Image (cartoon, rainbow, N blue to C red; front, top):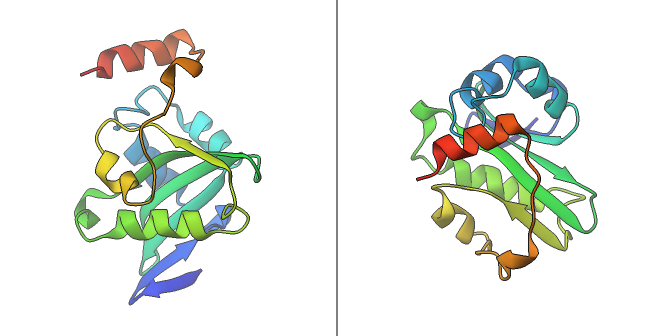
Length: 150
């Protein structure tokens, strides 16, 4: 783990991630409500994981799915409620974008309902041609998205 600020540490080591804490937050989120613990465990081991820790307690998390050259998808970004508003989300995203081998990715994508301002600070913007994008969702995920449409 690498210290970023006093008592704030950053890690990409999957073994450092607190799967129970991650799942506890994500299962109550608008995007992860249908996810099971086993599914979260699988995605943890299939992604590049990023965690922020305060005195060994995991306080923030996100993961990236990528081919490490052309494309990366940022997912599951969160900061625990009691640590929000202190700049930790910015610190986390900054570490993700500086992480080797992700620094030269040609195209990043993410989906967010309410954090556009955060990601815009890092150069993310609305999709230029959304008509080019397509998706295929399972019935379970369709129900989650239909329920969360504002």
